[in-house]
Image 1 (cartoon, rainbow, N blue to C red):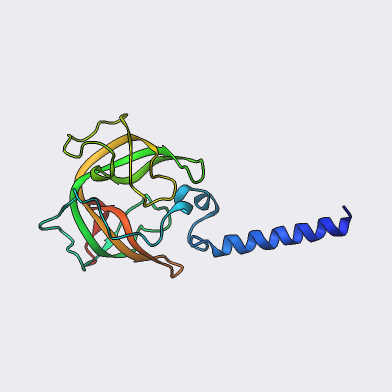
Image 2 (image 1 turned 90 degrees about the vertical axis):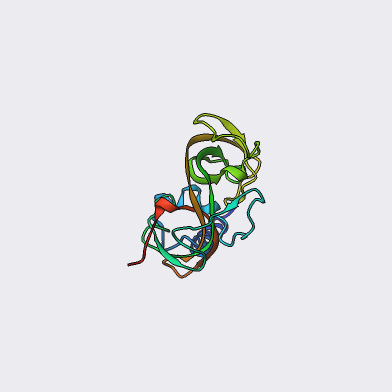
Length: 187
């Protein structure tokens, strides 16, 4: 291989890498360290479908169609301080879990949130304890479905499906989940 061939390969590699990075929805939103996080596996246009066992909230603080201010810090650089539109509101138990992504092989620690009805367990059961291992059918992150999740902790709460816009203008639809504690009124 000549120096010219090596130079051509290097230029193509740098060009491809630059294109890949700038096409990522997080480009211009997250720092370099945050770009390396598992949120590169986020599903940007989720389904509004929810498990049939999930109970619609009767009188949620933030009704469907209303707006709220997100204070969710589990999506670094993406959701804290962002206005969201409520698409769905449900009463459940939300779990923070740790799992290894089948997409990237990365260990994802304290992923927020998986709801009780997304777990492959008897949904009538009491809340699961920290340290218990379960499977999930949740698909709001690439690589999390059919993986073993370790329960970090749980909270009984109202969870919301929300739409919002990233600072770079990209729209995120049907994002699952934001808890009631992570939302504030706009005023």
